[in-house]
Image 1 (cartoon, rainbow, N blue to C red):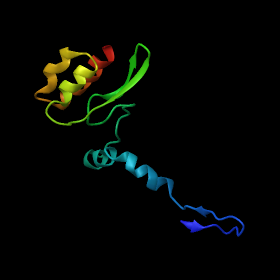
Image 2 (cartoon, rainbow, N blue to C red):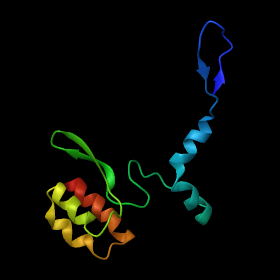
Image 3 (cartoon, one colour):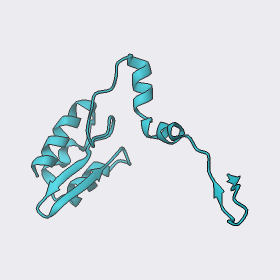
Image 4 (cartoon, rainbow, N blue to C red):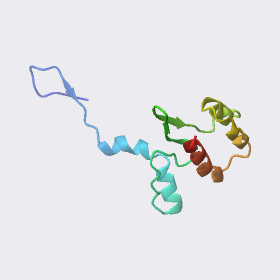
Length: 109
């Protein structure tokens, strides 16, 4: 923070780089790039690791469902919240191969 040069106003200005602010948004992409040396693919609103994580259409608009690995019953809780108990069986043996299936199943709901 720096004081303003204008004597009649008691204001301050902040010298902050846009790049400094944006680095935090690249959390999953930076390690992925440096490990594989390939540019990440576009995933839209999805998350590169967690699933489901997207913007889903509903009968009266849209809802954002963002989950992670929040404990033993996290997937079971999500299936109850979205009223889709048929997906509960997927709560064991989670793996990356189920991510596209989860996105598709919830999008169809």
